[in-house]
Every structure is written in structure tokens, then in C-alpha cells.
Amino acid sequence: MIEVSELTVRFGGVTSLDGMSVRFEAGTCGLIGPNGAGKTTFFNVLSGFVRPAEGHVRAFDEDLLSMAHFRRARWGLRRTFQTEQAIESLSVYDNVALVHEHSKLGRANRRGEVLDAIEFVGLRDVAYVKVGTLGVGSRRLVEVARAVVGKPRLVLLDEPAAGLPDAETAHLGELIRRIPEHSEALTILVDHDMSLVSSCCPVTAVLDFGKMIASGPTADVLRNEQVVRAYLGAEEFQ
Image (cartoon, helix red, strand yellow):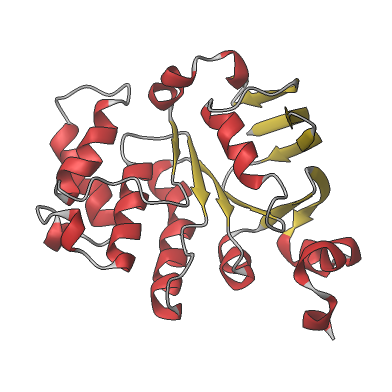
């Protein structure tokens, strides 16, 4: 469980997160909001890239914000980014192995665990192919494999389906739904594709201008009038 209390982030005169308070339970949770709402800033706080002005984050009964950012990967925090992080000149296997090296797990089971993550996303047949030769959809799957290797505790997915066609988005959605079962990790999904969020996330929270405006069962949240006005667009519900 992740419990966020009064989290505030300021960049100069801009308040990116304004007293954000929310609880994410086990499983896959959605986090949505318009561009600039503070979603990536929140992920950056959890990852240790941004230090908040105020607030607390407890992750599995541990004070996440007191943990040095370089220790969070060993603790079990994984994430994807809006821009791909895999190294194109390395193979799929080597890219996933690089992340495993930063986990708290030893070398003894590295090969098996790396191949397990690659097989989980469906890339076993291209495990030793250079990432730069793969299509966009497969490269996104490499990012997911990097996020689930090494027994993570918390997986943050930042718009993993952006720009993908429907068929590849559907396959990605199936994988996202299976992450908590596969790795026992709490997974938070940020995406603008409401069909993807609805299919993957039983519960969803909504940010708008850095404020948490709704959270709860996804179907109820997407019908919330404040959410419709702030993000989804009333015409979609007419």
C-alpha cells in the first residue's frame, strides 16, 4: 500500500502538486489528469528525482521520502518513462539485465529472472536481438520487462501506450493487468487512453492542477462530474 499525505511540490512560483493526499492499494491503480496536472511530477517524487516541499509518502509501511534515491531501485521501485530508456545498441537481454543488476537480488538467479521478465512480455524469441532493430511496440515491451524484473514492489508506468495502435495497446493492457500477479508489485498506471485505464485499473485517482479531485472505483470516477469537466470532456458522456 502507498499512502500519500499532503504532498506539495513547487517549482519557483508554480505549484505542481498541491497538498496531494491519496491511498493506492494492492493491484493495478490508475492515475489520470490533463497535461500538466502533476502526474509525472508525482512519479518523479516517488523515484527520488524531485524533493517535495511538504508531505509524506509511506510505501509498505516505510518512509519512502527518507530513502536515498539510488536505494529505491534496490528497495524495489521500478518505472517506465514517456521517453524510452532502453539502450538501442544492446540486446533485449542485456537491457533487462542492467536493471536486474541494480536490484537487491544476487547474480545466482540473474539469467533465469531476466529471461522470465522477457518471456512475460512475449519477447523471448528476440531476447538477443538489439533493441534498436525492434519496432515501436516491441521496444515498449522491453521497457515493461525492465520494470518487472527483479521482484519489484512498486511499478510506475508513465504513458506506456502512447502512440501505439489498438492491437498493441490491447496486448499491453493484458500485460499490465497481470503485473501484480506476476511480480506481486503494486502498479500505478498513468495514461490518457481511458479504455486502457478502465480495462487495467479497478480503482483510479484524478489530478487536476496538482490537486487530487477524485479517487475510487474507476467506473465511478469516470462518471464524476468534476472529472468530466476537468479532463474527459462532457461531450464524451452525452
